[in-house]
Image (tube, rainbow, N blue to C red; front, side):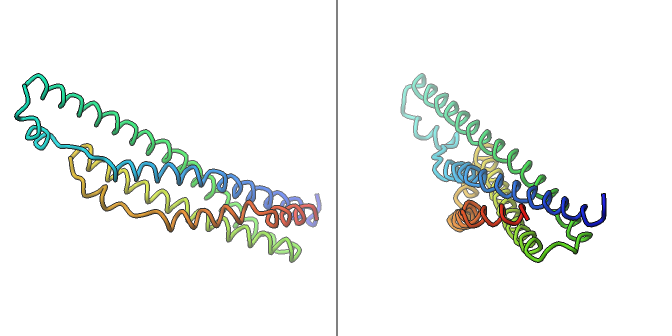
Length: 202
């Protein structure tokens, strides 16, 4: 294999790998964002009663009824906690995998760009553009991971320690929703995919 053939084959592979990663992130970001928002909203909407307040409410009821109400409340809390933590765990696993793969893809692309400077101008521009979008995608993944971490802390405070302040202080995700929507729209556009096909085929 000659020195000229090697960069050409590697350029095509680099373009294909980074854009496959981008398209995968774009396809999963809305689902991940939905899971994070659902967990956040579930915590904000939780009307959990602690033991003392529930005891006060049921103090004038017959003991058997009061006991049944307390058991029902504990079951509801346990179910809600299970659903919340399961949603957090599922989203966390998917985020961790995507973040690791995106980081590896970015590192390989950096290594390729460092040793291959003879690419055609249009191919260099495509690689640089892909780098920019991959950086944006990684930034959104990190933002979702941070939001998920805060939800974990709020869930722990609410369900394990009875502290509601953490859930009430969770940030709104409108800005994150807008950023995800913009990136997904760009990566899903016909212009982006047609440009990729043109550059890779050269």
